[in-house]
Image 1 (cartoon, helix red, strand yellow):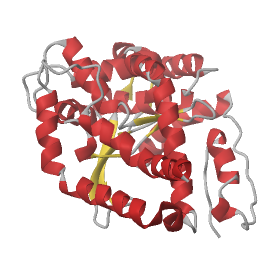
Image 2 (spheres, one colour):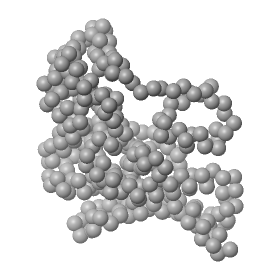
Image 3 (tube, rainbow, N blue to C red):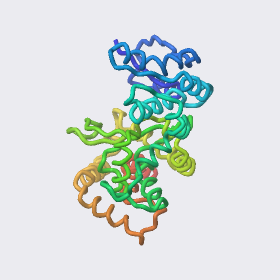
Image 4 (cartoon, rainbow, N blue to C red):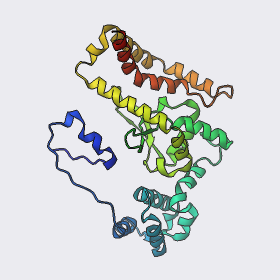
Length: 314
């Protein structure tokens, strides 16, 4: 028996997955939380901590404010979790979470931006980052898109993407490191498809960040068409690779070419680092795609384009 939890916006893809065609399903629907349940989410962990011997009190005025701002809000649950965690880390040392501390964080909506501002404070400390806000934003955008974000081409839903650390542009990595320290991003070692050994990966801590951080949502709005096309192409490539006749579709000549591309990708890490350092130069057009981003697109699209070309030649 296998138990899966999946969001409603991704359920259609699960239903159409060929590998699950013969599986018997028993569905259990998790309904949207109601106001009394949100109260338990806010106060329950504090009660558990107090019962375990670590006093933690939540100001009733804070609970009332959180309930008021969370009611009917998109991403209310992850925003509550994020905000309460920040409150505890920054103000919970005295055993109390107060409305005053919550307002200092910027409230439910402003808490993410406040954490970002704190993460980028003191640009000269390690890892050092640009002091100029526009330059920071330019580098950070190159770090997020398309490496840490994707958009579902069917639903328009914004979703996280797990990236290998070496995929990220070199000039964006100090900013990424600061966001990892601020726990807006997560990093660990794990095995991922296409790699026999564990690799260091980075991902967004919660997808609410993709919808509730104004600067990031603006970037995603501007790149929506490209990210949808990229995701659609990636899915098509995955479906193609799963086909039993994939190798025969490629043919020996095209198959050898694709394999050569894969081998080159495994060998060019040093070259990529050098190119990343070059792209940090002001002489490079910041709006043009980075070489690593171009390679990412090619690695996804190559099998489809090659087979399409082969079919046209026939």
